[in-house]
Length: 166
Image 1: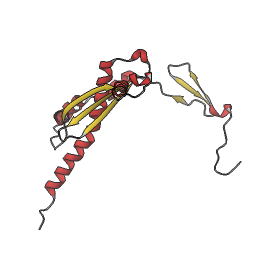
Image 2: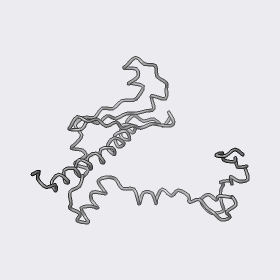
Image 3: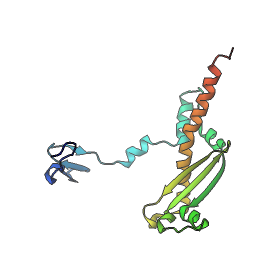
Image 4: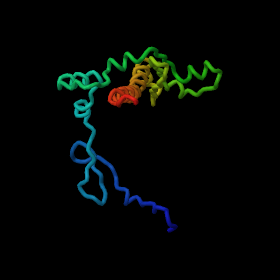
C-alpha cells in the first residue's frame, strides 16, 4: 500500500447500528456491549435555556459585574429586513432554483451601521413556514451580536483600567 493512504475497511470492520433490546441503539462491532446513547428531548430541554432565562439566573445569583444583557442586544438593533433568497434573485433579475425559496435571510442593522446576516434553511418544502423561517433567521443573526457586543464591552472595561498617557 502506498505511503499516506488509508486502507479501506471491509464491511465487517465497520460494525452495524441497529435496534437493541432496550430503548436506544446498539453498536455491533469488535467492542461488545458498546452502546450509543439515544436522544432524549426531555433531557435536552433541561439544559437549553433562552437568553431571558439565563439573565434571570444571573440576576438570581447576584452576579452584578458588567455584562451584556438581552436588552443590550435588542437596543443595539435599529433595523430588521427579511426576505427569501428567491426574492433577492428575482429582484436582481437572476435565475433562481426552487431551493432558494427555502432559504430565509434576516439582516439586522446595528446602531453603529454594521449589518449582521442570519439565515434559516428549510430541508423539506412541505415544512416551509415564512413566519418560522424569519424567527429562526433572526435568532441566528442575534446570536452573532453577542460576541461583538462582548468584545465592545471588554474593550471599554480595559480602556477604563489603562493608565492615562504621560
